[in-house]
Length: 460
Image (tube, rainbow, N blue to C red; front, side, top):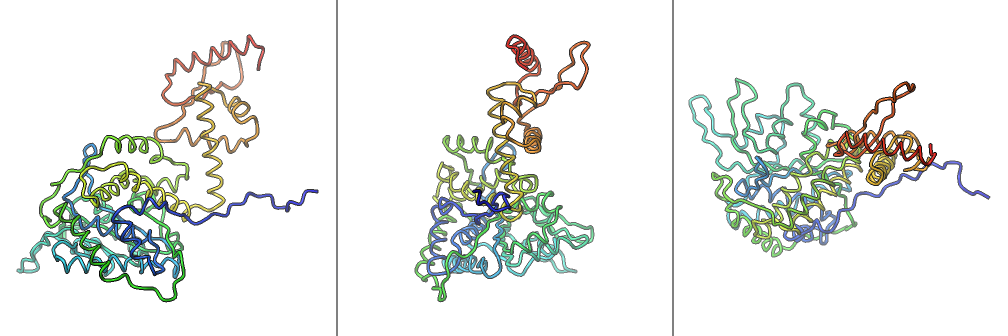
């Protein structure tokens, strides 16, 4: 007797994203473990905020040239967790203590920071302006363009973006890119040249979903953030502070990194070139052609992840600098990729419903099977894809979505060709599918050979 329930719909429950321990590499991992030991703070949330802080502290001296773009270690982090469970404030506390300890060791080494909340482009520029005249008074420029911004209520930034004429989100996009901030209006003469702003933000998933509009998802604002899901992993009624001697020891290690990159030379940019070892280049190239452009999460998630490649390079560069190296090596790429993967899973977890995620998995699996089929077959009709690749066991709608996914990939993974009708024949024209890169004349030859074979064998 069949004892299944009447509801045979697939089980779509999901676990919360769990990062790979490889993320906690080197100094970053030591800071994370020190802050989470004896507290409810999530070690990965601590690590992410520390990376944002350290990426700011090293400044614009270290640079990684890729093509015509010179990358610096500017990182925007957005910690997502439910209110009361994310322990978002605790995740920043140790980083703040490290900042204080670093200032005690040597004040100029620590980057300026801002916690007052951001409201406008003009207010942001005023934090590291190039100087201006207030009446007859000349206000001198702020020489140190490093700025670590802590937005414990990141919903405020999203609220500001909804105000008519507010250009804060555009200014933050420019800061991530490192371009000079020019006046938004003729009446405002505030400039900020070569800013080096890094941001630690925190928000609940409900606020993020309610306030993140389609514009932020498509204009490049959201995909400049490493979004991570992190909540408390244990309940500790009486959390213990990280011992002072541990904080001081970590601050001393941070200072060694900042001395290595000569971070206090704030007026000198791009004086320390970073490269990749041959092994790291091979791994990055493989990732760049594959996982870093994977769009199986759907259009919305893909828009959130468009900057995976430059974000990976920035993180890997930071891990290399923590090792006092100017060459990014395999372990640095692997640690950085751990964060990218956690960001991908976090974005899917927050922005994609469980049922939609299940549909996306089915479409992705079908697309991969079609690629393998075409790799062996060479050229195929839609009928052959349905009957030979899937043996008629997969719904037409799933196959349609899979083919559409492959055709619209960037670059396209599959091409479709409409073949001319044989003279005197009627009915719809035949379309064939092949992997991109195969020449059209070869497609035609494959199709003709296939037809000859079918005629000889008497097959359909």
